Image (cartoon, rainbow, N blue to C red; front, top):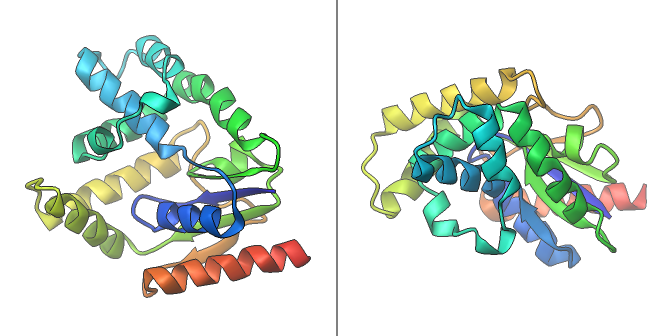
Amino acid sequence: MIIAVDGPLASGKGTIARALADHFGLPHLDTGSLYRATGLAVIEAGIDPADAGACARLAAQLDLAAIDEDRIRTAEAGAMASRVAAIPQVREALFDLQRTFATQPGGAILDGRDIGTVICPDAEVKLFVTADAETRARRRWEELRAKGEALSFETMLEQTRERDARDAERTDAPMKPADDATLLDTSSLSIDAAVATAIRIVEKRQKA
């Protein structure tokens, strides 16, 4: 069984995907980490993000096992991730890695922005997790503050809206719900309630 969980930044899709993986005993891949790792590599190499070829070469060299989750979860890496994710050559370089993970025996759960539309259009279950921009910005702002990053809420909200626009308006694999995806709005839901709702959605699709 392949489960695709898509949605914008800080919608809760990662938390939900990890919980679904635990509940159903499936391996999980946060595909956003691939773009964050690529973005971090671009920053550290001092490469111009407008150099599509150089960015794609870094993406092609990614090693899943070597990704440092703490280092890729900064606001700077997230902002660069959104920029490199808009590069078709980067998306192409990472496609096979994601597809191979998804099609392993027994299935898998992947979360991202184009899983149900591009990476796994054949997924048995597709969720599109969302929340209003203010709620998502506050979640991310509080997360970064806990890590010691100095960033105002207003700046975080502006960055969230900019990233939403970039992700939704890019010509290659724009972020949007798959036609057969189930929408899950977490704006007013607790983590437990959101996870419970997602589990019910998957179980309902399984029975169908």
